[in-house]
Every structure is written in structure tokens, then in C-alpha cells.
Length: 577
Image (cartoon, rainbow, N blue to C red; front, side, top):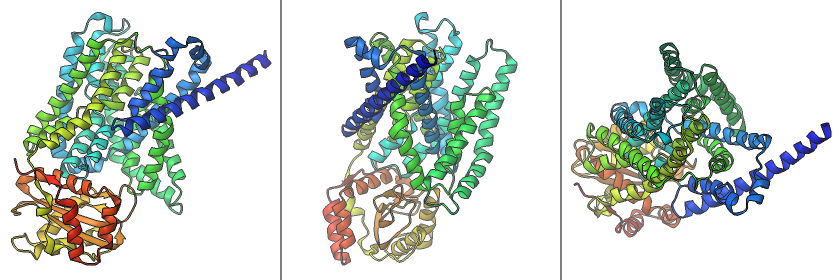
């Protein structure tokens, strides 16, 4: 008997290794191909599960599929455990992308957008779910609870997908990009709190008032504790770990993972789903000043290079997508999800001072469901909160909304009228020898140069505005380039000022590189829509590394100006609409 068990265990390990190697290699390969065509990598990762799962391989070669993915509880538990680790670590990494401090500085405008972006989508999706035929509702669940879950899924937006789209359009560091990220941060926190509450209610045999209030109270109290106090304690812990081991990202990674596991265990113990604990742990760790960009990169690479592809590949391993494909249901979920999130964000943006096309871009940025929507769907499917057709419809609608985001946002940018960006440069304010050792010193030098020009605001007012924006969030876009900016009430027209630092300046860059080229953008308070396009045009013009090398090698201002004219004369930005 013992020998048989040992032999079985050896076979389980062999099959497990085969499964992991196939899932990881194909998922990463297809994900890379999708990225080359401008699509999110999760599309290729889910296609991996469709190909290797019962949808294709199980249909075309059932014997091969049965060998690689046998219906063995032990074998299933092994791969399912890895998938769950992927879910937990992905929520930890997603939480690290949430910058609570930035959201707090933008709280007034962000709350207006995010609150309505929760209420309206939930109301629209709840009504649609209540009208679905009975065959879509699990017999073990009440329609009310089912509708609450669907409404929650249709509410949460995909922060990582939107961040990537804003980065690809070169407007992530703009004031508008900062507002979008702040609003999505609040949306994420509220959405996961609601989802956690729904899962807590689903685990109860009956909806009694006492247990419901206990779950709600525990969720709110734990979230408030983590955000208000936990962030300080975790930041102190990371600083202590890094003390004397600044170059060892592995120690910080271990500490952050332990914090996540402890938070997940605590939330699970009090009746809240462990996913919420990992998400909050990521928020606590991500806000730590001592957490370097290199360490963040190591954590993200570890999670997204190994665990996330395996998790998304397993999404389609357990179900035949073709057999459960309901085109009408997919269409309903796609329309309800996109329309609800768009309407909520747009109405919220109407309460702000944003211009017409900025409101449109904010609304579009809130439309993708992406990975977070799929995570919720998988958890709910495992808990029998939803049926297989509903699960498949949610996955397809989340994918479609993520694929549509990039082209849709690019369209909204192109809808604005165009003017020539080179006309905005203040040639006489150019400084090729920035001497300040810090980013704030460099900003002061450029602002002094602006103040010396005719019809420009005083240098002190410009410096105060630009440095205040810089303190909110660093404006380096990577590759040695920074774009500090501000909106000024007494400025007549938009201007761009170029500065260069030969030695390089530490600018808290996303890639950790020092900044050598600085393009300061100043726009009138009433023309804030210009900032997005100026920043995008500058970033697009500097994409070619040779342009940066030529600017760094320019011996005098005349040479540098000639290069700028050559690069940016063809770059267009919108005029005031």
C-alpha cells in the first residue's frame, strides 16, 4: 500500500510539472504575442486555458487532455493551489499600485467621480440581473444575492489596465492622469469592500440582521485600520528591513508577502474573504516611502512573470467555454458593464471643472473590467454564486472591455483640434546646465528663467505651483526624462521650457534612472485640457533614444533648439475647444 502511494505521488509530481511547464510557457508566449499587437497579455493567458482545457484539447484530443489534466482530486488540488497563490499574490501586487496618499490629495475631485462610479453601475447592473431568466441563477442562491454579486462585478474597474493605457498614450503623469488614478483607487477600495460583504453574506445560511451587521462592521473597521494605521506600521517595518540591506530586494519581498499572508489570514478568520486582506496589505506596503522602485519592480516581475499567467490560464481549464457560451448574455454583460461604468464616471466628472473631452476620457478610463472582474467571477463560481454561462459571460465581457480601452481612449485624444507644439517653447528660457542637485532645485532654476521673460508670471508664483504639483506625485516618465507641470491662473497661454542636467538628477523615476532632460509645462488655469496633449506630444517625440542622445550632446543652445524644432515641429496638440 505504501509503495502504491509513493508511486502515485511520483506520478502526481510528474504530471504537475508537465502542467506547470505547459501553462507557463504557452501563457507567456501568447501573452507576449498579444502585447506585440497592442492587446493585454491576459487575453493570451486566458486563450492558453481555452486551448489546453476541455474547450479545444479536450474536444479534439480527449485522451491527451485526460493524460495531462486527469480527473484526479489530488492532481486538481495541486494545480488549484498554485492558481490560488496566483490570485492572492496578484491582489497583493494590485494593492501596491494603489497610492492612497495621492488619492487623498485629490480626494475632492476623485470622490465626486468614484462615488457615482459605484452607485450608478451597481444600480444599472442590479436591475439587469434581476430581470435575467431563472436558468442563469444558481438554485442554491437567492436572486437578490445573485443580483448583488453581478452588480458588484459590473462596478469595479481595472486599475492596471487603465494605468497601462494612460502610459501608452503618454498622459499618465498629467494632472488628468493623476485624477483618473485617484478616482480608480477609491473605486477599487469601495468595490472590494462590497464584494467582500457579498461573499460574507453568501456564506451565511440565512440573512439575519446580526451577522450582516457584524460582517459590515468588521470589513469597515479592518479597512480603516489598515489604511489609517497599518500603512505607518508596515512602512516602518519595510524601513527597518531595508536598514543595512538596501540592495537586498528579497528581504523586503519576504516581509511584504508575510504581511499579506497575515492580513489574509486575519480577514478570513473574522469572516471576510482572504482576498481583501491581501489587497489591503498591498495598499499598506505600496505606500511605504522606503519601498524603492527597484523592489516594487522585483515584486511585480515575480508575480506577473510566473503566478499571474498560470492563474489566468487555469480560468478556462475547468470549464468548456463553447458549451457554456451564450452570445446574448455576453452582449448584455458587456453593454451593462461598459455603459454603467461610463455613465457613473461621466456624471461624476460633470461635478468637476473638467472640460468636455477630459470628462469623456475620464469616463472611458473607468470602463474596463479586466483582471479584477475575472478574479471576482472565479471566486464566485467556485462558491456557486453564479452559473457557468454567467461566469463565461463575465470573462468575455471583461476581456472585451479591456481590449476596447486603448483604441477608445486614443480616439478621444484625436477628437481635439490641433496646433503646433514647437510654438509653445520658450527658447530664451532654455537652460542647458541645470546645477541643482535635486528635482526641486532644477524646477526653481527653470521657473526663475520663466519669470525673466516678458508677459510671464513672477518666478515665485510659478515655482510654488510647479513644486506643489511635484510633491503630489513625481513627474518623471522614465528613460531620463521628466515633465514637471502646473496650471497657473495668470498665464496667458501654454508654454514649454527645456532644461538639461549633465550629471543627472534623482527624480523618483519609474525605471530608477536619473533625469537628464527636463520639459516643464505651464498651462493657463482655464485651459487645463492642453496639458494632456502637450505631455503626450513631448513623450512621443522623445521615444527615439537617438533624440535624447542628440539633446544631451548638443554643445550650445542653438544646436539644442535646432534639434527641438526638428523633432517637435511635426508634433501636434489640441487647441482650446
